[in-house]
Image 1: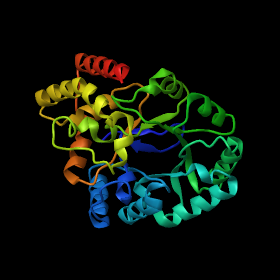
Image 2: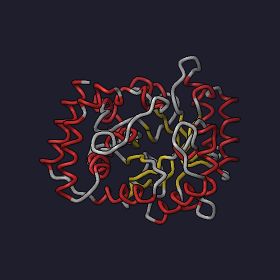
Image 3: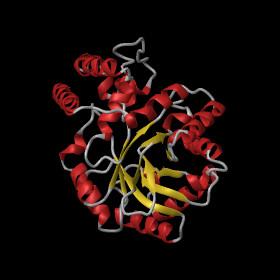
Length: 307
């Protein structure tokens, strides 16, 4: 595993961050708490130190699973969680973090994010409470997720932001339009979510037997529209050729491409499968040539322009 310093803080995060959204169940097919605790502990044993959750993931159950998994290892882990947009008033932020601390079974949170902006609640008020939490030692770093460049600049008027969490992958590259560069210039770390596009970049929907059922929340997402799945084939087939040449998985190619991008600190990837976890971790050591990076980037842009 490789590690990178987070923003202007004094601690580092693993370049593969374990995304804990699906560990709580609810929207995702769910195995068991016992399985998921074991997968998290396997991640830690393989060098993953950073775990990303949120109060909104299965009504906080994801946080409870993380708390169980890191018991006895807390000082060696970086725990990130998020406050939901409806809880951004100062009093509600305080209530939310107290509940998260209890579920995570910890007395501090390393990275506390605003999960989504809320235009009805002044950002200055929210940031004021975040600054208090940091001063009190309840959080070590302030993060924002799903913020535009404009919103990020607004937040910076009221305090330090150490990390941005945007959606970013070969099938979602909006942050390259200035946001990624701004973060790099201002020492703000970037940790990408949906790094394998909610499963599309595994090849399962183009090369395997996976199908999207009507009750799957992804069926309403842009990238899973049948017409868009068809247009994505060119990228998936290129990834397959590169993966076969290197005897690796498509997921490893997708994650490795992200880790090569300037300004990207780490990729958030979630799974309930130990084999997939270990494969994902290996992407840190996967070498992509300049030519492979250029081809992936070019075909990615071509596909995105057609969607």
